[in-house]
Length: 200
Image 1 (cartoon, rainbow, N blue to C red):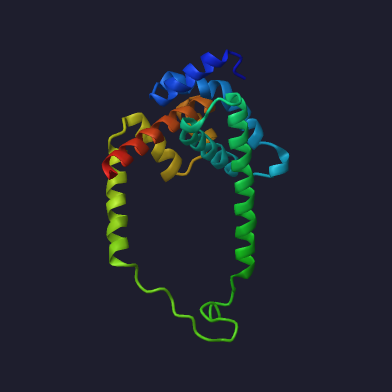
Image 2 (image 1 turned 90 degrees about the horizontal axis):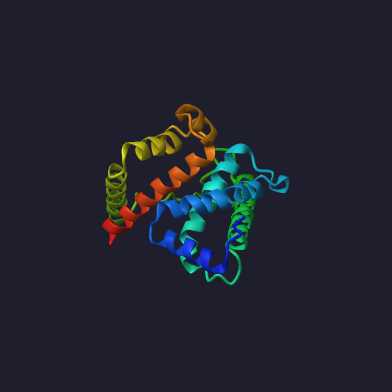
């Protein structure tokens, strides 16, 4: 937990917002154990993969939300609220997904008919404009990924293309898991900034 003064915490946040990677490392060093601890609360009943996904989502939300942090409370309280809200949202998504799954007909013949047996036409081919926009976004994403250094590209490949867990990647690269999470977060930030810059 951060035990410095209000001014020290404000300085740390300002440095983060200016893109100081050492400041981000310090924030992660101070708050990652608490983030991981909240995600591991038994009441959420997350499996290991969900824990990793929720932790990553929480880190991304902290990065996005930090600019709006007004220091009306401590940074630890700010982080706590974000992580708890992300966990609650994940539970809601799981509950909604179960409801949808219960409503989806298993009979392939009846899957495209309504309750009266009337045929429900399937959605036509995607709109041409939507397809072009999707291709443009894909191109932007590829260029953003290609701008990364070799280490970042490797982390992105292992995590999102080979779908390895953080624990598996850490073992393969002989790196601490906490360090790996911070490194990947910084890589994703670079992709986001590049993506936003080219998309403007």
